[in-house]
Amino acid sequence: MNLKLRRLGMRLRAVLCVALFSWLSACTSVPLTEGTSLSSYAGMSSSGGTLTKAKLRVDAAPVLAARTVHIVPTSTRIGSRGFDPNDLALVTNAIDRALCSNLSDRFQVLAPSQPADLVIHATVTDMVPTNRTAAAASVVVKLGGSVAGLGVPIPRLPIGFGGLAIEAEAVGRDGSQKASMLWSRGANMITTKARVSAVGDAYSISSAFAADFSRMLAKGQDPFKEMPTIPSVQRLRASLGGNPKYDACKAFGTAPGIPGIVAARFGLPPGWTDKGAAASP
Image (cartoon, rainbow, N blue to C red; front, side):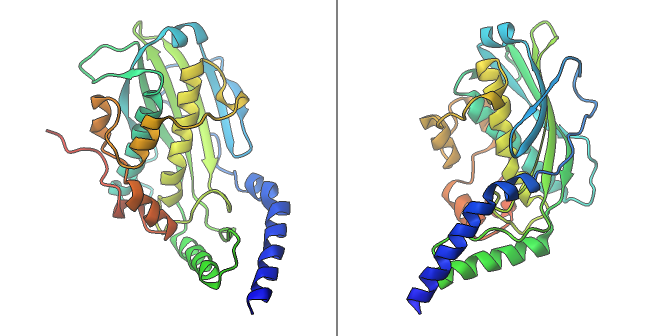
């Protein structure tokens, strides 16, 4: 019996290797949505990668000269669309928390009362809900494969994916736009864990946007033309639920850490472990 399972696992591994890139490409289907929150949409160039669609503009000189940033809490322009307001708040706060952690590698993050070289603001322009029934079925299949000891990653069922579209900008002390980005991404069968929540995929994908936008500001250039960097010690510590590098980031609460990782593995909704933004004093 064990020999048969190992052979089945080897066949599944071969199929996954052949189909990986086609699966990833096929699932990136969220439209690149232009909203109304940016001060300018001029001069943006098309960019992006295998999973992500993007348009961006960056004024390298002032961005590279900047040393301090302030993050305005992310807003939404999508209305309720049937989403629970608390779930929407979890997604926007996850964006802010990830931005704060990523930007802390290069910039000092300041509180709203302190003038900063760059003011960052992101807006959710579209959110595709995750089909909870499909997500639940994917979780059952994945856990069933683990119990059977197949020894290969079990992809999600190719239905019911969610997604996210965001626009963001960095504005200088003179009030002019120094960088901007339109960004969209959908969940896929391989890299996005199924979570039984309407915002499960949007929540998971939010950290990818934060990484891309932060890299653009850190280097003053298109982030999709370079390889992602290894996370710093402070980012790893924050992702595991530790205190952020700067006090200003505490407004966005702490990451769920190990409990959040376990919850994601079992497909539990983000709200089960993520407590959201810190309570106002």
